[in-house]
Structures are given as C-alpha cells and as structure tokens.
Length: 304
Image 1: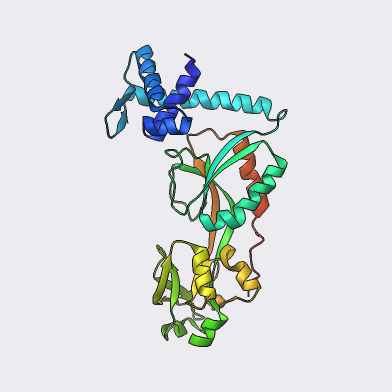
Image 2: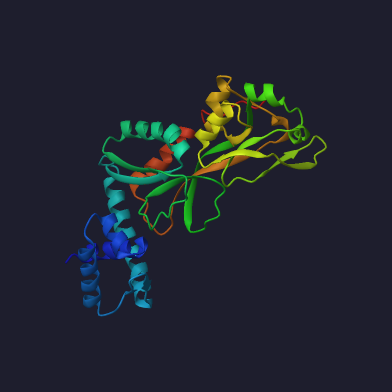
C-alpha cells in the first residue's frame, strides 16, 4: 500500500467530514475508503478517528497525524510544482464555486479566456448563492462578494463591486423621481434581496445620516430576477453594479440619489482553505482573475 496515498486519503476523510463524502470526492466506493482507513490505523497501531453512525471525531493521535500529513503533502506538492511549472503546461481539474448572477455573466467569460491560454485545465463550477463549505465539499476555491469575516480562509481580492440605487422610467412615471432621501417616505416601494437589510442608509448634505425603511413588494435571492422586476417597474432596487450596468447603459434603469451615498464598495475575493496546498494551476487562475477584472472592472459606471 502506498503510504503517501494513505496520507492523502486520510486528509480527504478528515476534511470531507465523513467517509461517505470522502469517497464521493475521491470517486470511489465507501467500503474502499473505510478499509483503507482501517488498514492505516492497524499499521500505525493507533486509532485516528472515532467513528459513529452520525459523526467522526479525530483522536489526539489523529490530529497529530493529520497535521503531519498536511505538511508532507504540501512539501511534496510544492517541490513538484516548483520543478514542473516552468517546463509543463498547466493541466488538471479546478473545482470552484461562485455566486449565480456573477458567475454566469462575468466568471464564465473569464474562465473561457483562461482556457484559451491553458486548454488542459478542466473546470468543475458550482454556481450557487449559498456560502459553500470549501473543505467539506471539496472545492479548490470560491468567489465571494462580501467583507470576509471567516478567518479560517485565505483570500485575495480580485476586484471591487459598487452598490447602486436604481429605478426604471415606468416606475418614475408612476411614483415620481426622488430628489432627496426624504422623498422615499412618500409612497415608494422596493424589490429586495432576501437577506438584505430592510433599511437604507443615506448621508445628507448636512453630513447627518438618515436611515429609511422603504416597503418591500418583492424579495428574491437572485439579483438578475430582481433587476428584471425593477426594469418592469415593480420597485426601486439597490444592487451591485455588475448586475444592472447594462440596463443603466441602455436606459432601462436610471441611478437615483447617487449624491446621498458614496463609496459603497464591496470587495470580491478568491478564497481558499488556509490548510490546503494551493496548486500551481489555482495560483495562476487567481492571478489571472485579478488581472482580468482589475480595480476598475468593465462593468464600473462613471460617477454621476
């Protein structure tokens, strides 16, 4: 039995959270992974993982072995990467997760451009607005649009995204054009993200802050759906610029009250687990994305 492969399998079992999930990620059967773990524990003469029908828990020996395995696997990967990166084309699979609207509209063309340079890279992409567990679900990296609070992840900023308050011409005809934030109190309505705050915060010319709750007529977890609802005149929308920039350019939506909020920028990051070796192909992809989008992405609109 290959000891290095045993280490890789053990790390996968630990990080996946179960033998079943590890087997799925390794594209093998559960019994083979379970047998491999049992044979590893027998050879070492210690119990590495306490297993029940519902959970698994690392023993102290298991935790120590896991940390040593990570170090050895990372060392080997780094050695091979340093030797081969200058002499071989990038190849292999990259499994990544990205928000649905951003992924389809903006990540897809970026990956196509990347594949033109590195045709031997195979992408396995999950477009999902939920926050995936990178380790448990076996992702190499994810794109996240938020101010990160999870210290267990490593992150690199790849671009920035701005929030814009918009209305359609049909909406303005029906409800009137808000000139100041106070006008929003006079019968205006909004379409809103499911988990977005109910109140909008504005800065008045007096420098005072004003918090206003505009009634919500529609909620959704998808920005493209809300954008179309706003275009159809159902309500105001406060949303990332990468979703509405085309509708603004072609006149379907109009930015409003821009002078009363500024610097509402959200960073977009490529994130990956800090205890997982970052392969050369993933490193190159992250560098590519940071250059592809840049600090002034193509969807950025001029300040009004």
